[in-house]
Length: 269
Ligand SMILES: NC(=O)c1ccc[n+]([C@@H]2O[C@H](COP(=O)([O-])OP(=O)(O)OC[C@H]3O[C@@H](n4cnc5c(N)ncnc54)[C@H](OP(=O)(O)O)[C@@H]3O)[C@@H](O)[C@H]2O)c1
Image: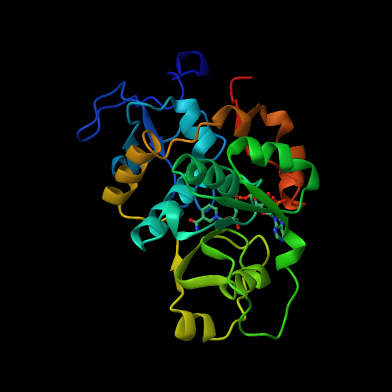
């Protein structure tokens, strides 16, 4: 097949079990583009069992604005819901709030009626975060200092944390009795130095979030919800299109913690 003959993005070219050629599909996780080839490719061959049919209510571009970051935010929100964190439980913190996981989590939680507190290192991102539905913003430095106290005054019923490290330890110290923290990332470091006090004195739950090896049934259910009640209303503000030529600069910004939202690489440009 020549480049000119390639189908539209996200379209299956061969019949697969339960999905005829022409079906719009999503493929992510399973280390695609990380441990396996397939990142930044216009045409990819992947096992059929890794594919999710695009649910009604999402375009292929919207699915890629969401991407693994939005999907991980959805898993985090669902995990909090499953552990009883409701909008009337109290404020919910989102760390790394301007990033891919964070920005989509802020939007989803706010649409569901939660009081969302956004933690960010970008003072000029307040307008963006309030636009996505954050009711208040804190400086991420408030949570990045190591302290010896095992517990602090409680502030949040739950948290979506993609930062890890000292930030996660500090978040755990401030979660309400019986609250939960959905932990998915390590932009602030992979270590976690804590005491058992939040767990044994306040019944706090630390919920691990993995999008890579998630079983397919759960993956499909989560995409269905991303097309419905979890669909962010601010996808236009969150996603920006870039070309392959822009990629170096965007990746440099991500590594420096300076990127905002999600970048969608337009491979045809
Ligand atoms: N578990 C999974 O399956 C899964 C899936 C997707 C992603 N992840 C992980 O989740 C994390 C976030 O992913 P992402 O796609 O949202 O990344 P991202 O778009 O680069 O966003 C990360 C955000 O973290 C904040 N940040 C950056 N450097 C920091 C630092 N040194 N200390 C504290 N905060 C910092 C920044 O937000 P502010 O400037 O607003 O603070 C940044 O925008 C990554 O570690 C990624 O590997 C895990």
